[in-house]
Length: 253
Image 1 (tube, rainbow, N blue to C red):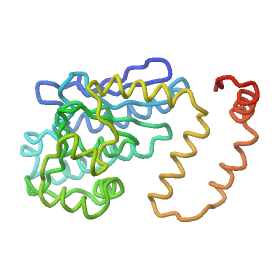
Image 2 (cartoon, rainbow, N blue to C red):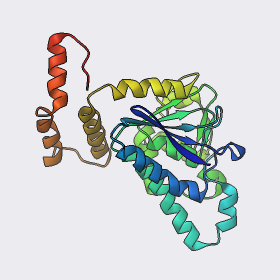
Image 3 (cartoon, rainbow, N blue to C red):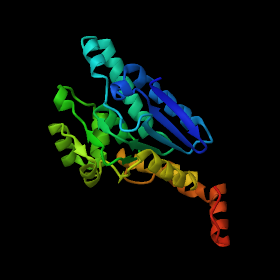
Image 4 (cartoon, rainbow, N blue to C red):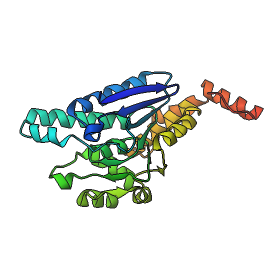
């Protein structure tokens, strides 16, 4: 088993489980990941998804370079591989529910591409992150590169891509590549996920959708975003939030 989806109440964990190859992603794994993300999104009980590793100390070494080498001359395979990688990142970045990456160990190349597609990233002190096309003579897609630019800005994205350097956790935190350092990222991600899951889900998901629209270039409200604002006042979450505030109790969304 190379990927698996586990459910724990309101939290789902999508775990990479190929430790013998440092969780390097094969074509089959790239193709499976969006399917598992879709399953988590379709489960009404799940409110937050965590992307992590089944093995402590190993996050993801990126794409399986051996598989790359074997199929590099096959154009049809290259096209299918590019589509599968994009589909994986797109599924994470555009998932309607929040996605948190719990990163423990090296997070390189395609592994870093998965992490930056998530909404939030928590890493261990020993984590190293890097995007290394310049070390392999390959080119990352515009979608992949945009995720990086959105996260750290164009100047830092250039430095990351031009040098192919690996960044320790402290440096990654300083430039915004990760959001938090924790000794046990999976435990910390679970605690954060429980906090998010306890909040009004219409608010959480609408906020994610609006941020995505801003990152995609939208600068002003349209009918969809205006409706998100207006409709919130008619939903059960708003009624519960107001009732809890007035009663000075914790809301139960």
